[in-house]
Length: 145
Ligand SMILES: [Zn+2]
Image (cartoon, rainbow, N blue to C red; front, side, top):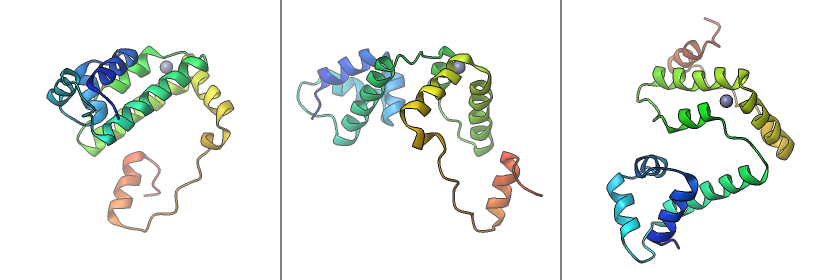
């Protein structure tokens, strides 16, 4: 259960604009405004759950003393591009940054301390050979051909 006032308060705590919150929750800006303006428990369950997860993450970051990287925060606010090749490039930019940024490296170390099991996710199962998989591998630069 989440009221409009709670949503507005959460948005304030998270430092997100209406537009950013709409993007995070995959809804329209009008929906965010309507929910925040209305009184009752009308935030849909799925969005209410997401907001609670964002708040929990935020609380954990603060409690763990994890510094926020302004570059990464700005990156997270950029919408994911529509085209697959642009998406790969978008993620690559973040990965390249994270390798060289002291703040991001510190964040990763902290994550590994807290949840070692998350640090090294198991490799994905081998994909069936297909033209799509081959094209994807070429795109991310790990293919043999
Ligand atoms: Zn960084």
